[in-house]
Picture 1 (cartoon, one colour):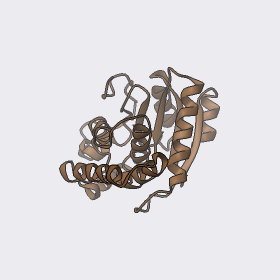
Picture 2: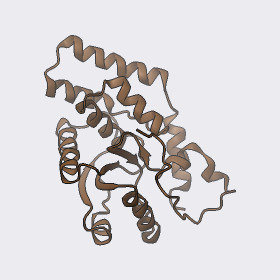
Picture 3: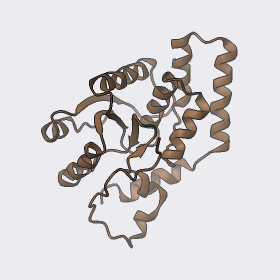
Length: 220
């Protein structure tokens, strides 16, 4: 298993490497495809410029991505992706990014999409992305991992190790959904909640700073 992005080719972003705006953690990791497991990749979205977005998409498919779960409720690249890569499975799975919790049905449907993509191509990778790749996509990835048998702390650490800007702040609602799915006891539910809280305490990131760093380069 690899947690780096070496398998993905560099994208010609036409960005001046000396521009300090693009040297921040938020800017560097925003659209970087981050390999969480052999099956699962997390990223921000495709570039809004069609040529650069398609170049980015080619790096995904060249690296074995055969399914995309798009967690954005505000936008979809389905037409562009299907026109360029008709064999790639694209799931529109949008939701809000307003804080608080995500609905249980959203997590469950996202996992169903993941399993469907793996049935379609057992050797393929599934790309889960939202706009910035900070909360929605990492939180769905967390739910997928715990459904696949990972302990909460292990799942969160895998995601953060692969993607340092992944805040994963919807993880608590993902765990609540999982606890309902598996009919966990009160003790088991609490154990997971404590593990998640400890992760947030021990590996806290400055969410406001990271979002600001992405916003600075968002339209470049």
